[in-house]
Length: 495
Ligand SMILES: Cc1cc2nc3c(=O)[nH]c(=O)nc-3n(C[C@H](O)[C@H](O)[C@H](O)COP(=O)(O)OP(=O)(O)OC[C@H]3O[C@@H](n4cnc5c(N)ncnc54)[C@H](O)[C@@H]3O)c2cc1C
Image 1 (cartoon, rainbow, N blue to C red):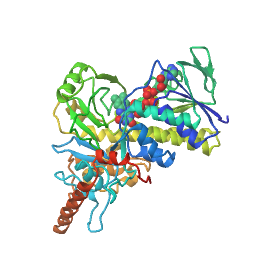
Image 2: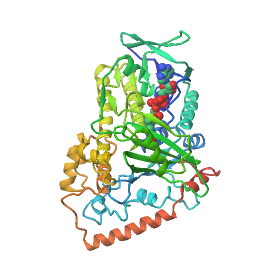
Image 3: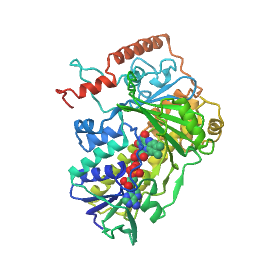
Image 4: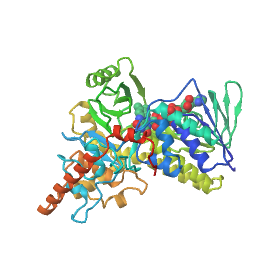
């Protein structure tokens, strides 16, 4: 059936990003979003990857000015991991480990030095708490090779405004689903109104009202790899002299890990843990003890399960966001997955002239399933090799985390070291972490490998100079506070 109207159930980031992407790419579609003021939105989810600015600014052609002014983001150049062996390391979006300099015989990964863990501009900027290079006129030299930190509620408000501007209709109603031959016949509001469309997007969050509850699509659990199932979240108002960090911190905790995300006025933290190893009370106690600034009485516990539904497009229902799958936010990938899901949906509709045949739907399902599995595999490496703490949880992870698709990558690394060659055949072309990401995590955690490269004296000298130059460049850069102030000054030319 030709699709001309789409009903989106849910107005969290998943529902509104889907509505906006479809409306921008297929303006002739009638799009109506239905959301429940009683249920509300999840109100967590603060980190993105570099897929996010590309999706909005390059793919959807959203104006960055408006985004900066209303969504009030801070920048994220990557993740600083307090993880693995004794020393912290950096994960960036710049693929620094696979790069090869003409003066050197091997790619950068072979020269990783845990004492000075920067190999390129992005990690050097992170190591010096700087965010953008400084132009001669004092403005930041902006690029899209970064991600953002966003407050979920503010971001969702910004999305709602963009959707309304684009002509998306938004209705407040708590609905139930009426089954039909294609899957859903209508969404029925408490008032009795029947809301009907040709395609239903299930963006109802963890409730998965249409795909999970109504259609009973099987859920594929990731519990043999990812043992965490809860998070306690909290934060504090940024104090005088507390500088904004241009990266997320992921810190090893007794039974999981803790994020730190710096917003302009707040610092937010969240302890992701396994309820099999830690009670909620003990998690709250450890969280508060290690973060004495956490505002008392302002913490809350969020429960989740890691995994994905077998298919996300079934009949006339396509699930997007938490209703399709979820993994803990260690690499902050949920908004990235939503970007990919929504653009793939728009491309599928556009390519089939809004009449998608079964082979296209099957391809959509395979592609989306694989992207979730790729994330699970990459996270496996984080848990299997973290030696920072010797607690029952981490001992269990080191012994029992199933590596799945990461297994051949790790085997290759153990024999060949941080070579990028394996990425060509062991990872799918759409794997966003690439071999570079694996090498960042494996070298960062100091996982041993057989063929250690002995750098020549000339290579060592090259790296000594290169690291010093990178550090000097970074020191000249703008701090997040300086970059923010510059963006608010009149006269900036947006690229
Ligand atoms: C602890 C934690 C940390 C996270 N951190 C990150 C992160 O750093 N980065 C990241 O990318 N993601 C993160 N996420 C994931 C984040 O939640 C999602 O990226 C994102 O916000 C998508 O949410 P959603 O729109 O799917 O669901 P929600 O925000 O829950 O929205 C669901 C919508 O459906 C509506 N709804 C549900 N049922 C009905 C009904 N019957 N009738 C009408 N309306 C209904 C609700 O009212 C709401 O509007 C995190 C998640 C958790 C749990």
